[in-house]
Amino acid sequence: MTMKYFLLFAIAAALASCGAGEQQQALPILGNHQFNGADTIYHQIPDFAFVDQDSNLITNATFDGKVYVADFFFTSCPTICPKVKKQMLRLYDKYQDDGRLKFLSYSIDPKRDSVGRLNVYANNLGVSADRWHFVTGDKDKTYELAEDYLSIAREDPNAPGGFDHSGWLLLVDKNRHIRSFCDGTNPEKVDQFMKDIDWLLAHM
Amino acid sequence: MSTRLFPFLLALSIFASACSNGQKPAADSNNFTEEQIKAQDEAFQKMMSIHDEVMPKLDDINRVGRNLKPYMDSLEDKSVKEEINLALKRLETAEDGMMEWMMASPKMGQLRDSLSNEAIIGLLQAEEQKISKVRDDMMNSLQAAEQLLARIQENNKTE
Image (cartoon, rainbow over the protein chains, first blue to last red):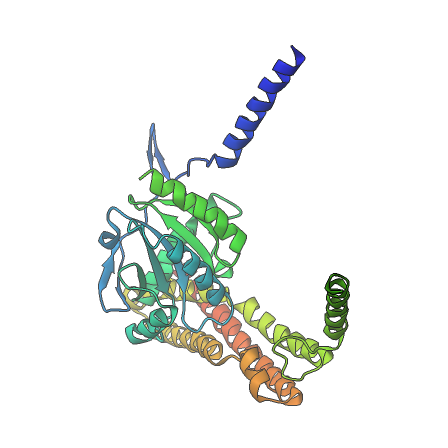
């Protein structure tokens, strides 16, 4: 009798521990939302228009029906950006067979990061422009956009807050909502970020 | 015979590598001693810590510039417009200084491939001076622009 209960308990414990290890919490919608009575107007990435390394015009429409990982960088960044790019390459390689995920890197130094320079940079990384766009454009607009992307800081004290936190990766869904972020210089944080990407792709 | 020889050889190789680790120079050192590597790393960190300190200010520099620019159109006072223009130029020059310093900033691997220890330390100390000047330009231009903006906003409030 005792043995039977022990066996049942062991099976239940094993199942519970398997379940706990695989569970991924649903991703919230991040950002400064507006509350209008009973309605919530969720934060969305504002309109943008930039040019990528192949001289393509890149706008929000480029990512219709897709999810993407965004970051802010510049090609002459000496310390943080190389680490972030290494982690982004991990993501790029992992999801190479899933065309639903794209990558978008905004240069905050358009004066020096011309289309040509971005083209060389992207080629050195060995990535394709139809999956990973490196964009350049109006500097003030880029900074305003960065402030908007990184505005999730006001909601979450652990979230990015500007270029003192440069190196952050942000995950944007097909409705222009930010769903996750991570410190792109930290491989373990990026491991967790991958789980968030997996969840989002499974719940598109 | 081989069954007794193998563990002996294994132990010997382990000891040999353990001993040699203590004498081997650090990775990518190009014949620098451990003390020299340490001193070079410290000089690099000292230089880079100044960069890290002011890097976040690029955001503030851009923001104050964005807040000043609309007043170029909305204000009529020519002398204030000229002050704004100068402030924006100073901000841009300071930002350019930072971006250009970063573009040219030393990479330890390249230095160690081509320079002596004394030359490396000397170069890093010189770069520390350069980035200190960049920091001062950024902070001074930022402070001046923020003070100008505060004054303009205050004057516009009372009008």
